[in-house]
Image 1 (cartoon, rainbow, N blue to C red):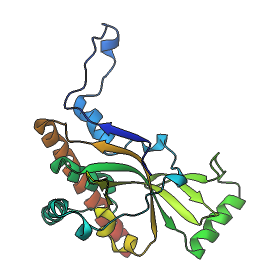
Image 2: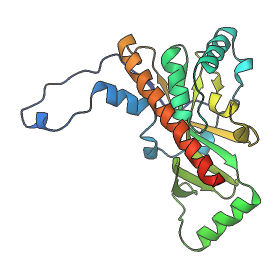
Image 3: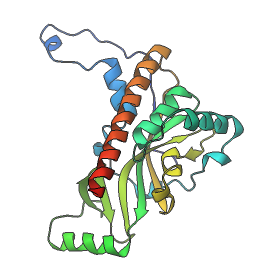
Image 4: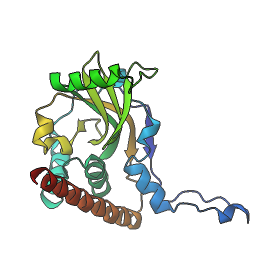
Length: 228
């Protein structure tokens, strides 16, 4: 099973000559374009294919020794953000170029209470089936799908893959709530950051760390609101 797309990110994008009129239109910088790509900001353009499921995702302890060492160093020195899969996975790839980013969706089983809630919403006509037989809605994580027959909810997600093609997920590994769920992985594309220049990687890492800090603040705010 292979994802549908693979991207190898260049250190410099080709610049085309623009006319005087077109130059008035704001063009995103190379840094902005790369950043939006590595954090999977365009996930809403894609629908997960259930027949593209990853059969096996390893924990970091079972990775090849060289990758295991890199991941161990990363998890010791950097923040792993709860619910921060985009920033966790691209940060690791940016500082360890042999590790690539996988962007796609993950699915987890719905319990009986959740199933009843979604069935009630569907009966009220608030959700409609798409052409793939799934119900679609928007959640805090973005574009979400409900597959009633398989009793799973599918959200956008990002994890990593080694050069040997071994999938692993540090976000799930360090989230006890996700560890208790049966998680399915549906890849959309693989992003290779190895050819990005050192200078550009430094800029992107800075932005990813800022994104992680925002994620921590949002999580603590949510906990405080629940406790109030």
